Structures are given as C-alpha cells and as structure tokens.
Length: 580
Image (cartoon, rainbow, N blue to C red; front, side, top):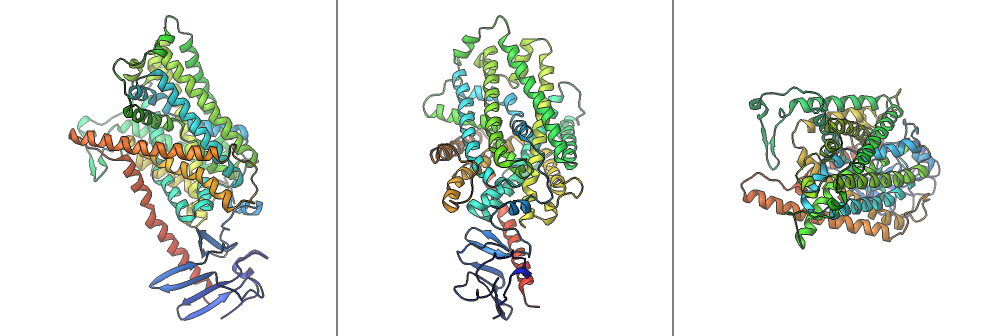
C-alpha cells in the first residue's frame, strides 16, 4: 500500500478531503491515498475495482472534495472536480465560473413574468370553458391553479436562496436526491420540457402572425406527406411549413441574441414583457368599459349544455387545471440563471413572490374580462377568445390582439431560451453532459455551446408536428419534478440542518406538504383523464397516445446516457489514480 501525506497533488483543497480512500484491484495493483499524514488508519470509505468494466463501491461517509456525489455513493472525479456541496461563496464561484451576475430585481421579475405569460392565457380559456361549463368554476380554477403555483414558488425559493448557482433545479436535485435523479431532471429539460416549450411558443408566435401577413405554404398534397413513428403517431414536417419556418427564424434569432450576452437578452426581456402586460391590461380595460354588455349575467349563467357532475366534474376541473398550469408554467426558470442574479439570496425569493402574484392577478383579470363580454357557451365555442373579445370592443380588434400575442410569445420564447441553456451548461460542468456544453464564451460570458445545441433540438421538435402531444406531456413531466422539488426542501432540512438559509419557506412544513399533495392529486387525475381519452379514441377507431406514458418514456430514455457518462468518469478516475 502507498500512503501520501497530502492530497494537494490530486486537487484536494488544503485541509479538506476524505479521511481515507482505498483503490483496489486496478489491474494487479492495490494502493491507497490519504489527504494528510496519519489518515492511513480506520475503515475504508471508498473502493474501486474492475470486474469486466470498472465499477465503484462507495461507503456511506460523504466525500468533501475531489469527489462527485451520487446519493450515498461517490466516485473520483478529475483533479479539479466540483465539490458535491455548494455551500460557500468559493464553491458558488466555481459553479458559476465564466458567467457574470448582471441581473437585478426588476430584470429577474421580468424574466419570471416573461417566461410565465406566453400563449396560455390566449389559447386555453376557451377549451377550459368547454371542460367545466361554468364561468364561476372557470375563474375558480385560475385562482386555485395560481395559489398552488405560488405555493410551489414560495417553497422552491428556499432552495434557490440557499444554492444560488447557475443550473437551478438540477443542482437542487443533486443535493436532495443524488446525481441520478438530478440527471433525469436535466435530461427531461433538454428532451421535452424546455425545448418543447420553445418550439410550441415560437409556433404560436408564427401562427398569430398570419393575422397580419401571408406566409407561404406547400400544396395540400405535399403538406400531407407523413412519417409514422411507433407509439407516437404521424409526423408531418411539411404541414404549415410557412408557419414553422417563421417560428424557426424566431428561435434562431433569439438564440443568437442570448449568445451575445445575458444582459442584452435581459434588456430584450424587459421591453417585451412590459409591452405585453400593457397590451393585456388595455384589452381588459376595454372589455369592462364596453357598453350594452350584461356582464353580471354572463358571469353567473352556467352553460346550457355542459354540466358535469360528481366524478365527471372533478375530472373536468383536473383537465382545466392542466390548461391553467400550462399558462402558469415557467416560474422555476429563474433558478436556472441564479448565478447571474445580483444578490441572489435576496432577489430570487422576492422576484418569485412578486412575479407569480402579478401573473395570477393578470390571469384572473383577463378571464374576468373574457367572461364579462362573452357567455360561457360562446367562450367554449371559441378557439381564440382574446381575439373574439377584441373584435367586440372595436373593429379590427382581432389584428390588434394578434400583435399583443406575438409580443407576448416573443418575450416568453426569449425567457425560455435564456434560462434553459444554463441547465445543460451546469450538467456539463458536473461531467454528465458533453464537456463542450460547459464552456462559457470567453468574450460574451454566456453558455454559447449550450444555447446552440438547445436551438438545434428545438428546431427538430418544431418540425416534428407533435405540438399538442408535447404540450400535454411536458406539463405532466414538469409537475413530477415540481412535487419532488417541494418535498426536497424537507429532505434538505433533515440532511443539512445547519446550512445557512437566507430565506425560509413560510408555514413550514404545511406549505411544502400542501404543494406536494396537490401535485400528486393533479398527476393522478391527469393519468385518469389520459386513460379515459385513450379509451374513447380507440373505441372510435382513432389514433391515440397515453401522454403521461410517453412523457415517462422520454425521461427514462436518459438512463443509459447517465450510466454511459458515469462509466467514463470511473475510467478517467482510474487512469488519473493509477501509479505511473
């Protein structure tokens, strides 16, 4: 056995390191390393051996430096690997290396509002009215969904203030549940949640632009060319080709806007977020000032034909909640850029509280305006409720609201693109994604490679033609991780009771538990609705898919990728530690 007096040569920080590390059966040699003199005694905490391929067996004592944690286990990283815990300013600086903290409270709040307020408030109310059949229940769904989302934001803010590093929930889950669960979250973000959101929001921007300009299109016969994908359905890349092409241009433009600097991207976000909020409030004001409208009767009169009762009513509310949650989705994206926020311990929780409260007020106000002008049955039969309301306010209102929607979706797409690339950047820095994605641009100090790869995958989803499936799927997958994040706050309270917490969730533990239970109920009701819809479609001889199963499958596809990168780290560790 070989013992060394210092671990400095291996990249261990001074006076920090595992008490004893044993490396066994690397080829025919066995040797041990100790970070300081006198540490070559006691029980081994780490053993690495070769059985066919390299494998790792780790004891339960948490490694402090030079190691990457995976739950109770750890493996040797490269000499300058990240610490498994990001608690000190020095650690946070390393996690955010190459990125600049330039986002203030106003820009941070605008990022939240810009990411949340997108297409949902303009497209979902009509469908939701058709599901519940009552203006009172419809408004109640928006309030309930807003309160539940606010509970999640207030709970998540504790972890965001505790770990203000770029990468957000990926780093949170690593601390809460280990690297495997964190990787699955990061993979889900890349595979469907955020890239699917980018594609869907850009598509809505382009779709509404047809109210103002004429876009080219292939002939009907050419547009029908399709490719069948098992268990998913028909992929039609040439359908609505003009709309998709403009959406692709938007994704490319915004990707390069954020490539050249987060401060510039933040400025774009501020302008478009303020503009769309002003436009929405003007629409609501015009609705309430509209003469000869019996708004009170519209708000109190239920549908003449849509009257779900009992379990059917609960299922209808759950289905409508899915639409509302899609509109509220995006509140957690600010944690992705936490390392680029000024004074994050103070500004992150404040921006989450302010942003989500403002979003809820705007959404409820907009739905009040819709219901004030249109009876619930008229809302249920409308695809674009906002445009129909605007047309009743003044001639040409539909074109005006189309411009507002384009501004809204432009800002939302920018917010998603800006924030999401930081997750892949962080994953690469943690050696679970290609290393190139973890490099910050030397001049612009942005995750340039991560932005480019994100843009390319978003373009692929855009032309897949499966937007409805992606939208339903990403909400289901998102809420699995939202619930896990809230429960993780309680996990960290037990695992790290002495870690400084600049902000503590109010009403602990009742508020986090309430959000976890609400998330579980929503997920179960979504599965119930998906199964029912699948049965109805197949009985009618129509193609169908279980969206929740599709979402879970996409997430689990990341499992072999994770173990591939883990095996590479083990092999690199063995090569670094083998005697020369």
